[in-house]
Image (cartoon, rainbow, N blue to C red; front, side):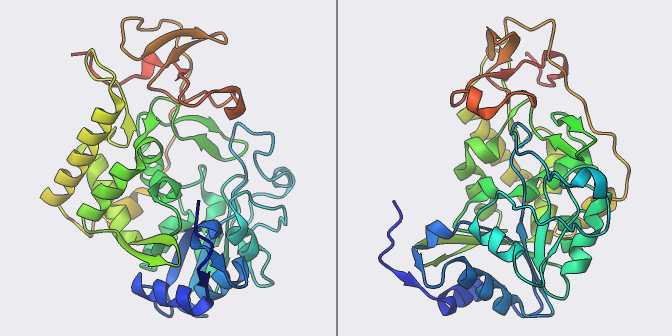
Length: 358
């Protein structure tokens, strides 16, 4: 339980943001959990006011205004079919990413990027530039998405009361490299299921990924009220992601190796290797290669359930609800989260598995 005894005021948040490197004219992309701060005097409006004051009117504050998951009945903005794409989204439908994001979206001067599932709300003089390219992106984090434009402004990514498991921006390198485990493109809604073949270290072992980023020197932290808050520059994050996926295109997901499926060991091995690859080549200009890749047209991978499973694989779990199942995989995009118990095996995609069995 979060201790709500401490009252957090706007000045406390502004001071904390300054410690995280937010200065006037800054462009920030924030993920925030209000409940983690303790008692915030004025609630989510105070958090928004603090972010706006810290960034200044010449900067920008962007916060997710995403819809629910692809496996939900609330997937995608309902008005997008007749109106998109256009430079900015006119929809007033709510997002599903928390009180802070909804409070920002409802500000009188707020703008919203054009994307059916992963739109961002933003305020500030730089917000229009950061948001209006999103209409060109086939996938949530692909070509000309807000994070790509944040790189041009040397912006900052904030994690306020959340950890790296909330870092949607991780997907950008997967989109632009079209990494082998990406799957299930939904062209109508300009969306992709990011992991069908594999489970993401980011979600299963976020503490290990967090530690790798700290040790790499790209993530700084401060306490604001009861909330652990973190910041990365967009360029450092993009450079780190580019370097580690250049070294190992599968480094962000968990998979069986040889005759074993030991996800925690795999996660530790991969996060250790991420750090080693970055320390061997700490190229803080590598973000430019990611930005250049965003100009290319990519045809995303398509994954299908296997008809010929590798039944001797240590991750194979038999047939469940009509499909061969793999403990190393996520659930299929047509299956709903509520139908699954925690860590239940996903869809077997053996014909797409890139891990050697030796």
